[in-house]
Image (cartoon, rainbow, N blue to C red):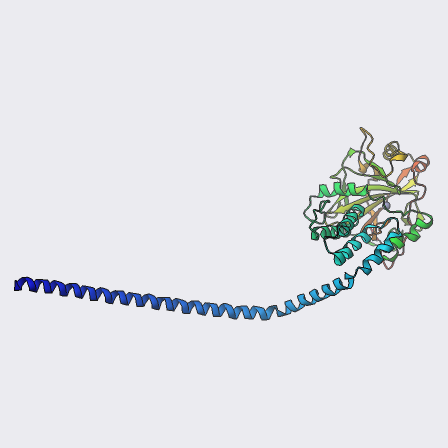
Length: 410
Ligand SMILES: [Zn+2]
């Protein structure tokens, strides 16, 4: 029995030893976990400290920017509170009520004022911006159009006219939009004589009076050397014309282009003045053809072809026999099966005089390059008299230090 007892004791002892060893191990590994955790926590704490330091640094660096933003905020709040009582808006409303129609520039201003006074939810805000879009002449008043579109977008409105303000818009579409837009510009009550004449344009279109680079000009030497070469590539297409009350306009086939050196312009419209607006050595010609072009950046270039009384002109014969009927003023007129290529209006030699000027009709927008061809074309006396406008030319404008350049004759 003693022998068995000893074996049992030895087994028990072994079990106890195993138990102690297991406990010790468990205990050890547990502590290791704890120490691991502690190390990790310390690391995390260090990282947090770093992040905090960086945030503090950033805050220091942004203090200036924040100060500037605060200044803007204060100014905007001051502006809002100045308009908040609505006195300015009601004054302006009363002022505008006296006038039958107000132009695009004033509409966009009215929209902005309404936005500041009544907020974007005021239906008047939206309608003022929308009127701007309807009134603004697409060709020449891009900034007004863009201002109205931005206003509408800020008011959460869907913009009805495709953004020409978007530089990536395809050029073809731009030309089509521009042509559509020219049809709705009959809101301007300007003309060529009396109270509506050129002397009074500045009252409604300040640039016409205050601009320092206005068109047309009297072309007189000495000339600088012209740096531009013109190359045209006009396309034949269905003849489309409009009598807009100021002139006869031709809406050319999209894809008709002019290269000014390497800069590509689309031909947007062709129209006529009688007599010519440009003078050469103080003398005007019987008429002039203006070919208005626009490049992708919205820059405008007008090519002018002077017309002298002489032989019958076959290209213009085609136009004059298809003139829009008198009761169709302001509407696009497309006689069936008549095709026309604006290139037929040009002389073969595109040597020219050039100067920086403006549109010669309201709103007299500046930044327009003028290229007046040296070679003129002929029109018979009968053809000149058939043009429906007897006098639609703006007088020549001050040089204000401008120089005229001329291509060198070979
Ligand atoms: Zn013109």
